[in-house]
Image (cartoon, rainbow, N blue to C red; front, side, top):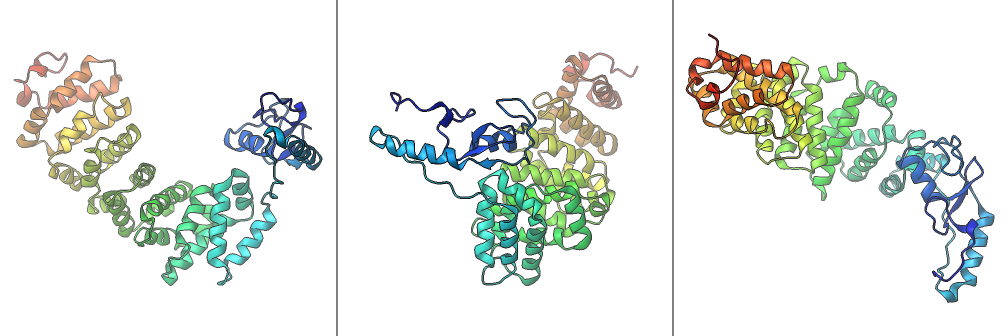
Length: 404
């Protein structure tokens, strides 16, 4: 094919390949549909690649049928030279087709086939997702899940959760749905208990959907969460899900932390213990930051500190993350150790901090370039327990901690 001269107007300006589905933008430039949609939707560009004129992602892309026929004819003419024929592309999905599929969704004989078709279309490209959002599909998927919950039906659940995971659920629409139907969160929590073939994927996708919904809701929803909510999602953490699902779960817990009643329910669900178990597995940086952020909130209450200390590896794993992950983790770890020392600083606890290297790590923070507020917090801890730790080699070499 290198020896064949391809007409320049057959070539997409983005991919520099022969166009398979030429479409003309409002700027008058023709591109291959896949390339220009990737440019607009995935790469989030808002200008024409050739003219640099404004090109909103919701602007029309008109199929260039004449050019397609010319390309197909040229391919046939050069078939003997190894050129493959380009098939006529199928028409892209539009809003009216989505509305038709939504209608079929509520007809029992078409339901399973329709929801599977919707799942495939949602995964296909961002253009399809755009039309699905415009047609109100997120609301229909949530209502479908609520119906499954009420009827105890699992057929189609995996696909429905998959669709919601793929498409962006508009914040305003989410809030309205939650106002109209208070079973949404309860239904998604129920999905976590359902036994399905791809249970790991379904649970991970469910947590990602829950994260989207919780982030879009008002504080009144977070204030009304029930013990079952925390029991189920902590159980998911324990049973194992994908890394993306883990981080979504941790985001959910962190969002719920500011409310005292939520912290109490989280501790009752054994969240502190499970977080330490998760951290002992050396997770990725973002996971550690989320875990330490949640531990900071939960250690602000007595039962949370008691559960923290009931795990034999708690002080060790938190102190070992200092100076190894990020400044955010340093700050949260010091805050956790500060609360433990201040409110639960028994002789046994303080001795353990010395034995596992927590005191040494605190001293090290004074020797490196870190925030002034962090260093001051460290000095307060070391001064408060100077008499018990004074024989430690690191204490003797640290500046500004001797209370005398």
